[in-house]
Every structure is written in C-alpha cells, then in structure tokens.
Length: 172
Image 1 (tube, rainbow, N blue to C red):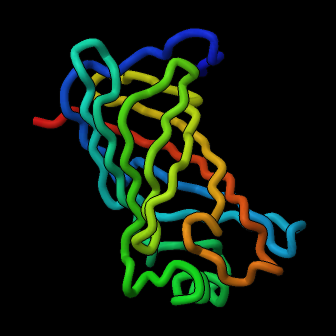
Image 2: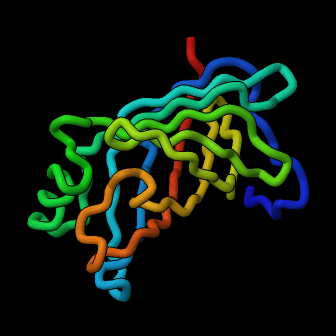
C-alpha cells in the first residue's frame, strides 16, 4: 500500500522486529560535478525496531557497512571508502537510531557517520504488513558535509537522496 500522507499509516503489530539484511537495501543518488547523477548502495548489516501496543514506533536501530559502499566504479568506490570520505577502515559502520513516527509520516533519526551523529528526517513512503513480515520504504535527503564526509567539495555535491527498503520479521 502506498501512503498518501493524509492519514496515519498502517502499523506493524506490537513487539520486537529484526531487520532482514538480505531483503533490505539502502540506495542513494548524488551528483558528480553537480550535474552527473551517481547512483550507488550500501549493504545492510543489521537492524531492529520495537513497536508499542498502540502501534507506535518505540525504537529503531539500523547499521550499514561503510566498506560495502558501491557505485560500480571501482576507483571511485575505493576513494570513497578511504580516509577523505567514509574512512571505512577506522569507522566500519554507519548507524541510524530513532524513536517515534510523526503524524506527517516522518521519522527524525540520528545518522552516525565517522563517529559524528547528525539528525536526518526520513519520510515513510510505504508500510506494508505481509504476514510475519513488515516492509517499509522511506526516503531522506542527507547532507554529506553535515555528516563529516567532506572530500572533493568542489566536484561532488553535498546532497544525497537516500532510499531505504527495510524488511522486518518478528523476533522469536
């Protein structure tokens, strides 16, 4: 079900839900030379949500692997994983933590990159319950400079459009 953002979305049943990394994706689009689109992804490592009995989001934690950054261009990917950008060797994970889903279907969470936490607001575009699975699609605009990823400021745009597809299964 797609959401029209005028009504509260359907909610997942209460309890703890574990993210299924193999079924979840984090994709992004940025600009190189401020004109040419660059698309890529990160592999999802882990995640967890807790849903209250009233259906509200109590807590969200998710992790993606910085070393898995990929755009299909090996030279660029190696550079972005390096110390001028993500510094994946010293900071292997990007983390997202948040609480509560606002009435306008937004979630403001803390995105931690290279040890720096920055607020990021995601808009939930879809929330679908499929038996024992819940699928969430959300989007956000992320300022990489605010996150401490400032390499090549003159050649690479600051804004990234991030698209998430997260699949959760009920824990035990």
